Amino acid sequence: MPDTCRACSKAANASSTASPAAPPTVPVVTLDGPAGVGKTTLAKRLADALGVAYLDTGAMFRTLAWKLGSGAHELPEGDLRARLDDFLFALSGAGGASVLSCNGVPVGEEIRTEEVAALASRIATIPVVRERLKAAQQALGASCALVVEGRDMGTVVFPTARHKFFLDATPEERARRRCLQLEAQGQPADLATIAAQIRERDDMDRNRAVAPLRPADDAVRVDTTNLDIDGVFAELARHIAARGGL
Image (cartoon, rainbow, N blue to C red; front, top):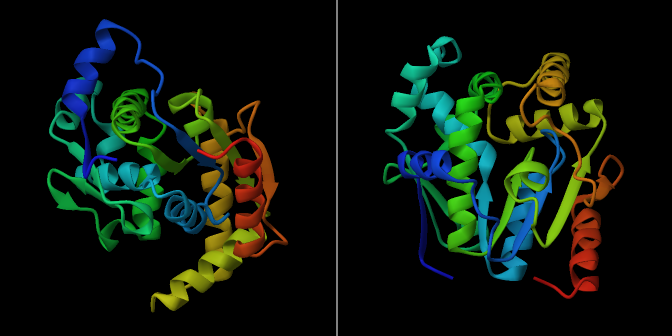
């Protein structure tokens, strides 16, 4: 695979207005589902096992939310389009060592807060933001094989992906996992608050007008509530192997 895959929002927008984006021409594995189902850990592990790049599309939304600020969802569409032109995403490396960069700077822990997550959910409802990031994600997928996680990867961004999975778990279990993750990072974690945030985000993601969170018709659905990471990984790997690998 190439050392670096690049996708420019401005170039992607120019091409998408001329003709529909072409389907990916390289193998792609999609992992969709709500927050807290283990997508990140599993996607990295799958990418390691397959020797391909790992793309966290949620990090792309979070990066834009962090850079654009709290008022981004209230900007006039023309102003927002102009600001989106300034961002260039690139992906380098493979597996868990894959690095997502924006304008040449690796995306870091500054986007991994609950506040940024909430801002990302707001801008994710805006059609022009989804349009630009969809084009950028497809450009990356056309450049190198990927394991990609998100919320509409199998339904909208990579509808012809070779393997599609939809992971889910109860809101209570997902909140418990998020608390443990935050505590491990030395951050404060209140279970009731996080559970309420997860339910609010679920409602926004599942009911938005553009690309709502839902399984693709041909996705393999896995309930992770009572499974550990090894159990879920084994299930995903079994399905991929049964269909001839990547």
